[in-house]
Length: 459
Ligand code: BG6
Image (tube, rainbow, N blue to C red):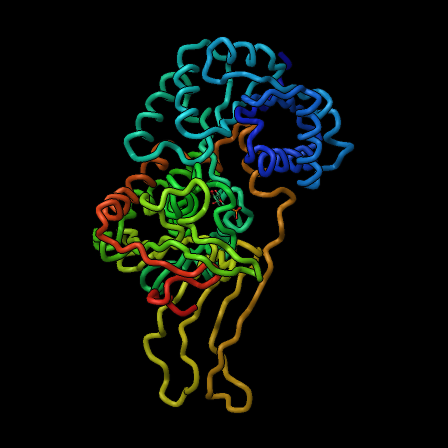
């Protein structure tokens, strides 16, 4: 085994996640870090020759914009194993084939991931092995705790990468610079100056043939329990001393530990809805309940909104509204920080007195700061103006960033075990209230901005 070489073993290599996100991200990473010595092994239940696998890798690398000259040697050396990753014999065969220190990437459903981990816990594993587990990490608080206990039996916390690709999004990373390198913002980043925080991830995309997974998750678990709570943590955390994995993840964990449903009342401070038939971009979309593989009696929501409190000195009394949904009119993916009104507007100043807002868009990567300044003509009449800036794109997409952490064994951008549990703890009361039907399942036509009865806070 070569000492510096890393072998990325993708379990679930024949699946959609691998082709659409992981391999394109890997191609970007290899292109950006040409000196890295990486071997790639695919493992799947679909019979495939290594030559067929290499073709898939080539086309996914191309889709991600990889430089063919840089990635060709990785493709040529790549192998595929048609194997059962829950079997100790098969896993031993795969690990023996690794020329570098293995990083096992579980692109598998949670139930299979748990079985593979149970098998690994019985085996002798190569030193320095890294495990990368896709979301969802467990299916509720209890199962996440059990999975953490199982993992702790055979690897250390720093060898575990619980993947949340939102932590690799360049805007989320830019939040660190924006908050902590500008005295202007950090100084007013608290309940004395901020009225509310909204984190929205509205998508135009519908179900996209993912009923097998999504109908058991819904918008709350698919997006809020994982991604949006990570974004909340970065917005709400105390300044870390350094950006190393202990400091950054410690600050994020502390913020999440203080987070709970507003007033402890999920029936009053959460909403859910499901899309009916409609039109998006001129295309007709069938009702969610009619899509193949969906069981309408499960009452899975495709739009979820929850109001949270971060119960600490900095944020007391500031609502954090997290919302995400599918088949909506607009792709609105942003963090909106609304500042409080000024304590006194001098009499004589007229016109708009809308509070200042900072709008940070996760896609596209831009930010806007709305301010009130004197309008045209009359200097004492205020108008709203917007200062805008574009965040530089990173060379790699979110999966490239995440893979960099995995392949350099740096867990900074992965979810720590206690944080994964906190996220389930936060949404647990919401899941219970919804199962008990304490919150109505509203409807909205696909292509609309949500149920008509839902008023959005103006932004
Ligand atoms: C995934 C969810 O984790 O994130 C999807 O399962 C969602 O439902 C996606 O569409 C959104 O992330 P991105 O980066 O593709 O906008």
